Structures are given as structure tokens and as C-alpha cells.
Length: 422
Ligand SMILES: Cc1cc2nc3c(=O)[nH]c(=O)nc-3n(C[C@H](O)[C@H](O)[C@H](O)COP(=O)(O)OP(=O)(O)OC[C@H]3O[C@@H](n4cnc5c(N)ncnc54)[C@H](O)[C@@H]3O)c2cc1C
Image 1 (tube, rainbow, N blue to C red):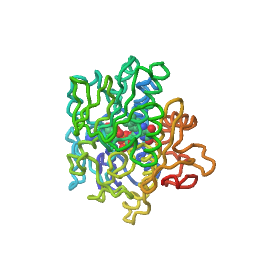
Image 2: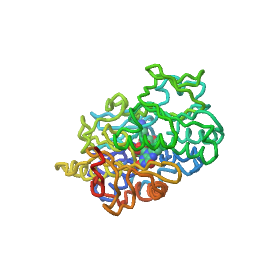
Image 3: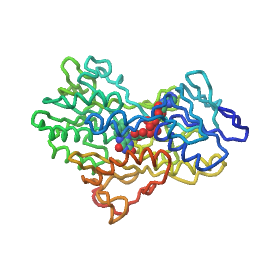
Image 4: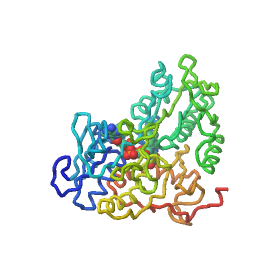
């Protein structure tokens, strides 16, 4: 078929919508296969963000300038990058329609358009007078950078860390924010004047029972108040209070909120997404449930695993052989097990690690080698913290280029205390 830039009639046209974590990793991995494929990546801008850095910017642990880099540097030779926003997918014509009116034809489309915070979805959030005065998000570089001087200047009062609804990307990031904030205030000698409060729509600190118990215990140990089952209705800007549907009110001096996370507008516009704009996929093959020539990776899917960069790495191991088999007209050979790894900064120079998949919730034990570790699961350790810091280099130089990482793709139960699930 003739492709976007007409590279020849024999070429299979692969179009990747989104040049973030998933789009870049997949483009690099596919190019290494040296197949007769022409690959095009579409992204609305040329700024690739290391999103885990958003957590560190407000605490002065990472300069905002280190978070964003040009996408071009991370895409391999031979891949075309189109900088333009996709507005819709014309499935009948096998074309992605861009805001310029250009149409990009595909044989196989890989949607990797991620998720973005939507602060307009909560009344009184983006449209409130306190937005970026005493109400901030940290899920954008702009929000994280604007928050830094506010954290630095907070001498006393209530610092409320809030999750509007789930699912969100990196679901542990708000917990990490609360723990880092409490530690920051402790180091500045302000922990007697600043109360850190954690407000969540969940019935505990996290979705998975063992992790929820452990993380809830850690918050309590650090003196962080938890308010659970809080379904936010609005932010009352005049009173500076979060208001829930059941009438509860949580006062704040500084509110750090995670707005509802939504799939990209192009997904919603194309009729591919659910209410929140996430694409229905077969959770094991990552193939769209309604179109076999559309695949979805990373945060854009509705797969019930974490929305995390580590997940993209594990997904790729099943997805790439499946795509190659599909193009060849063969049965799909691999299944993705939902494997996720999440480091959780717990303050005091330590971090915890979660390892889980669709079937197995996070438990204690060691990772990645049974009996050896060296990383501890669900327990704070200095080595976990150093590994989380090292992830930045791993991200740019190993994960995005699709290089092998020293972790098994499928989750292994070796070295784990499975009885701790009970
Ligand atoms: C605060 C925070 C901390 C995090 N910490 C961690 C961590 O410690 N470990 C971890 O593994 N993960 C972490 N994550 C999550 C991780 O960053 C994401 O899961 C990962 O980036 C998802 O990759 P993706 O490719 O699906 O989406 P993204 O990387 O967000 O890429 C989506 C791309 O699609 C583009 N796009 C969207 N719509 C369009 C359109 N219509 N037209 C053209 N382009 C479009 C966007 O511009 C973007 O470049 C964190 C996230 C946040 C916010």
C-alpha cells in the first residue's frame, strides 16, 4: 500500500500516534527488526517529557529544564516524525486526519496517545480564582514548576494532596508527593506548623489490598491524615475547601490536586474511547476490541494495569511479536500478563517498590532475583531510592531506545511472599 510519504508500494505502513514513552520505545524496537516497514510517528509537539521528574521539580530535587528534551533525538534514523495534532481517525479509509488537513495512511495503527489531566472536569478547579494561586496540579511541567516556590514558601497551614478520580497515570505519584512533602517540611523544621493531608476517592491509600495496608500504615506513621472515599463535587474557592458529594468539606491552605485523567481528544473524537477516552483493548494482546488493525499501548488503553512507563516496556515484549505475526497473517504468539513495577518515594532518602500483574497483587519479598534481590518489595530502602533516581538515565538511554533491561518481562513470583496477600 502507498504510505504517508510514499516510500514504495511494497512497504507496510506503520503509523504511531503519539511520540511519548510508548511511541518512542515501539518505533525504536520495530526499526531494529529490519522489516520492510515504513514507520511514521505523529506527535503534536517536539517536547518529550520525563514525566516522573514532575514529582521532583516542586521539591527542588530536579530542575524543570531537565524534564523536557526534543523528541527527534530519541527517534531512530529512518522513522518519519510529523509534528501536528491528530484530530480524528478515519477507520474506513485507514487514515489519521491531522489538524492541518493532511491525511496519513496506515496499514497498522498504533495508538500511543497517553492520558492528560483535565482540570476543567471539576467545578472550581481550572475555572476557579485560586487555580495556580493556592490550587495546583503537578501532573504537568507547568504545574510542577509553578508549585516549587509555593512549597518553598509554605511555613504553616494545611497542605492537602488530593486525587480527583481513578484511573490516573502513575497512581502512586500522589502518595509519593504527600510523603516527600512531609519529609520536606520535617527537614525545614516546619512539620509542627504544616499539616499534610491525603484525600482520595479510594477506600484506602491504594487500590491493591496489601499495598493499601502498607502504604496507609506508612502515611499514618509519618503523621499524614488520610481522608478516604472522598468523591469530589467541587472546589469552593471562596472558602478554600474541597467539597464532596456527601457534603464533607476539607479546608486547605495549599491544595495539590491530581485532576481527572482523560484519554486524548482524538480517541474520543474517533469513537474509540470509553467515557474517559481510554481505548478498549484485549488486555493480553493490546489489539483494539473493534478493529484488528489498531493496537493501543501505554496510558491510552483501558487495560486494568498501572498507567506507567515500566508497563510500556513490559507490553512491548508481547506486542512486537504479535504485530509482526498479524502483518504476516499468522496467529498472535504472545500474551501480556499486566506486569507493572512502581517505585514509591517514601521520603528520608528511601523508596519502596511494587511488582504486580493482572493476577498477582503486590506482596513483600525481593526483586528481581529470588533470595538475592537486591531490591526490597513493599519496604522502604535506600537502594530502592537510588534505583528510582537512576531510572532517569535508564529512561532516556535504555528504555526509550528499546534496549534490554535486567528485569523479566513477565512477572515472576520467585522471591515473593505470596502468603502476605492474606
Ligand atoms: C507525576 C508523574 C510521575 C510518574 N512517575 C512514573 C514512574 O516513576 N515510573 C513510571 O514507570 N511511570 C511514571 N509515570 C507515568 C509515565 O510517565 C507514563 O505512564 C508514560 O509516559 C506513558 O507513556 P505513553 O506513551 O502512554 O504516554 P505519553 O508518554 O504521555 O505520550 C503520549 C504522547 O501522545 C501525544 N498526543 C496525544 N494526543 C495527541 C494528538 N491528538 N495528536 C498528536 N499527538 C498526540 C502527546 O503529545 C504525547 O507526546 C509518571 C507520570 C506522572 C505524571
